[in-house]
Length: 270
Image (cartoon, rainbow, N blue to C red):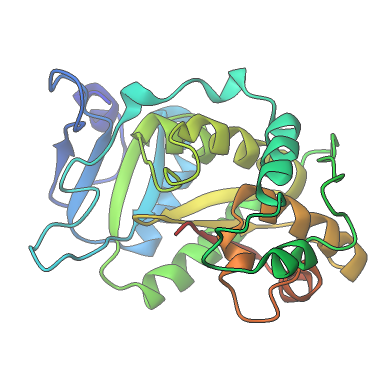
């Protein structure tokens, strides 16, 4: 992130500051963060301007630990130096490998019993392979993202505006150095690669990010139960806590029914 990029914007930003990465020599500043809560209409304007500004806008939620820090953003708990390149990752290979790892029976699991763990993934078992699909460009993505941004700011009135130098929201996650899924994998570029795939296939857009949460708008979600079931398998591989720690019964089928026609996908890693 450079001051020149911020200066190229055609809209007046609220008061804010550059945030320095928590690693390295202090020279990397991957994020501009507003000092005050975000305005959804400004977010929409910045999204429309991204092709000329080179900046991706984010709505940033925080975890309060009672010390006043707007974590992890204002506290600089950002680690872009750790991340590889999303373009070097194969999303289908990642999802397939994660699936096999998370469906392996684990006697020490403190969330689910071995039988419950296996029941989550029926009827796929451990043999599921992520799809390798291509879609025509999806339309209406920015409009849907704007609608979701308005909803998100209403539900999270303390969310702040962030700007990251990235061509798309998926790449913004790793350019930012966000490590929300670190309990599963500390290279966010892997998750960026999967989200990038969803951008093309489902018209997903990264709208908001929290300490360990990710919020996407989706302009072309699955509209049939059988399609949603396949997407649910991808979600499980990407973020198993969505299903493991969701409302019971923790099964793909139950989760799939919840995402039929849903224009937003939310993920949380324990």
